[in-house]
Image (spheres, rainbow over the protein chains, first blue to last red):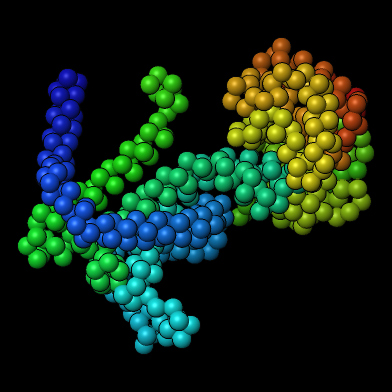
Amino acid sequence: MAKAFRVLCVGLTALLALFVAGTLGHVFVVSPTVLGRALTDGSLLPVLGVSLQTSLCAALLAMGLGTPVAYVLARREFRGKTALETLLDLPVALPPMVAGLALLLLVSPAAPLGGLLGRAGVGLIFTKAGIVLAQFFVALPFYIRAVRSAITAIPPSIPAAAALLRASEGYTFFHVILPLSRDGLISGFVMCWARALGEFGATAMVAGCIPGVTETLPVAIYTRATAGDLASAGAAAFCLSALSFLALTALRLAFRPEAARRLA
Amino acid sequence: MIACDQICKRFGDRRVLEDVSFTIERGAFSILLGPSGCGKTLLLSILAGLEAPSSGRVLIGGSDLTRVPPERRPVTMVFQRHALFPHLTVFENIAFSMRVRHLHQDAIRSRVEDLLGLIDLESYRHAKPDVLSGGQCQRVAFARALASDAEVVLFDEPLNSLDKGMKSSLVAELKKWHKYKRFTALYVTHDLEEAFALGDRVLGMKKGKVAQTAFE
């Protein structure tokens, strides 16, 4: 019975791995000539630049604004906490197109906020700042979840000990909580960045697709594939997949258990 | 001097502490003795400011500190599981409260070296807590508490998880450190032997009430 169960588990794992590898294989098996041409003819590099720039900005913004939020959610009990947690998690479940439409309505010149930003000279529609906003909105929950889990894992006696050694809450946050949550901060940042990098729906709604200005890798894949240029779409898909693969591999290597690292 | 004046603590309808009142003289080493679950640790948390009482007052040095946050009380605590900062070395753990108070770097160094000598862990100054034994961790926690210059040190069953030999050696050392620093101590335990070996005075606690006081 135990052997049959083990065979079933191994079989299912192999089948699933084959399915994922088989599907992604089509993206990774791109002709070097096509890839080389796409990278040197000047059509893909600006797209790659926009994607890297905006996704890193979105992940940094999530880190700056999301860390205190994750701290409050991990350490404080207050009325409406569950509702707030659900609200902050909502962008994960929401179709990206809905998120994009909501953002578009929020920052359009006719809306109060959009009008205010417009008068201040800040344009978000069809700009890189709009891409950052859309990516930030969709990827923020991934960051908050990772950091909140890391902070929750710190035993309550640790910040209590800091307070009883005269440390203010702010001092404890910067000198105790943040260093002890380092792994969560890094993994949250990478997950958030990877999600921002692959964001399509909300980005397309808010920023459109202006070549060289607001064209990100996922948007480029869509426009090129729908225009029938599958080779160029494949090259863009290869770049996106390779970046995601490298990010996840780096994350796994960085967080290998200490013992495994010593054995390696 | 520490004084608890009619401290009560309720969680919903459940009364966990009932009219707890006692006074501890400055420089005394008092023991709070009672079975598990009788409210000893909760009372310690109220004295430290980590929990607020439902009613009653906490007075330290004659001032009412009931609503004062823990970082502004002249109180520190040695926890049952030592609560050392795992990302800091032994030296940095002991120096923590002095860095918070922005003491001069030379003063911090000399004070920490002095305390490392007192707890006999000079060779572990650069070690992180994860390589220390339970007894060594508690020694560092004691030194960290002494470095805070708090008037009152609260001990929450700090020797609970140690073996008998380590326990009796730390009891002797704790008595030595108290003689050296003369801090006011309230030490929570359920171990009768430990209580009478350490305390000037023993407060008995049962079902949320301080039931009796015994003098050694």
